[in-house]
Length: 266
Image (tube, rainbow, N blue to C red; front, side, top):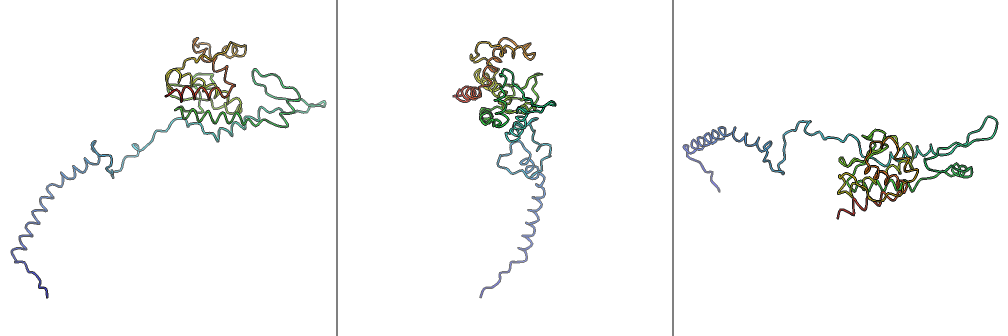
């Protein structure tokens, strides 16, 4: 049978006195402990693994959003499809009998024959090749570090512009409404300017000519006579000549960006 231990009466008073002394020491050091705890939360030397439980003001949590969102393909292709309808020929009945055909013709393209117009009405173009080129070029530009946005260019009168300082390709918001072919050419044109930057030292470098300009044709000369290029330097006109000369060859912009912006990095 186990007996119960009894402490002497003086021992109880000793433990009580010791407890009171310990409590007094803790209370006296409490301000210092609180100050050290605060320094752990807000001090500059807080380790990265320390969990901050203090609430941060909402203004510190705000994330700065870009003024314009990067171009998204789904809504873009919907706009392009709607714009394509404006280029389809249509037959209009005449008051005295008969019909007339109405269609829009792009600069530099020959007139269509009646047979060609009828064929377009019966079987409208799908523009699958142009849309594939647009998709491939947008992806390649993103991989290269550039951003493509629908936004008003800084230069007045421009349908699009490449801004190497911001690494941003701006396309005027009304350009998708012109249809797939027009948008693909504008994007390809600016992609050639992107390659001109990469060849000059990197995506953010001022562009320089690539040496791929063909002899001047009446069409190219007409483009360079636009008021947009009235104050352009000779070097700028040469770079524009390269872009205009190859903007209809949709594979050129893709190949040049890949060559100078991706392959050229190594």
